[in-house]
Length: 170
Image (cartoon, rainbow, N blue to C red; front, side):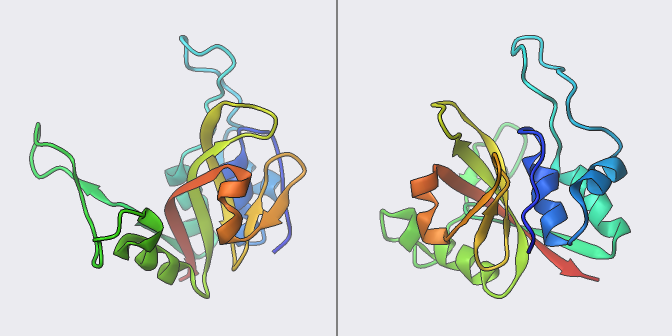
């Protein structure tokens, strides 16, 4: 996988572009906007960025499917009902990384390529923002000039995963 980087709000298309070996500028052009709009009145300077569904449209045009694998899936049984997390066995451990959910998540990572989304404390900044990285057995982080690290090093780099977007050829 070849590292690709871009604007700091473009980690999502950078990560998906890496996974399918498409230049990120072409990927963003296929989305149809550059994510630089600032639509949040109460958050000056916060960019619109990109949504996973926009990236999935590009993936499908390029012959790929994308399956989301959440670490802790959540459901609402009826409008107004409480959110219920879904726990996969064994779920008796107090540490998320030893639950059935984490084991299921890492099983889906094995031998596959995709994008992991979550949150990250940015380099030289205490603010936590949404973030996306590419995965092919190691993490390819498009932040800054880009760098790689292992799943076990995520905490060291301030990355907190939430969903794996498994990309597969159709």
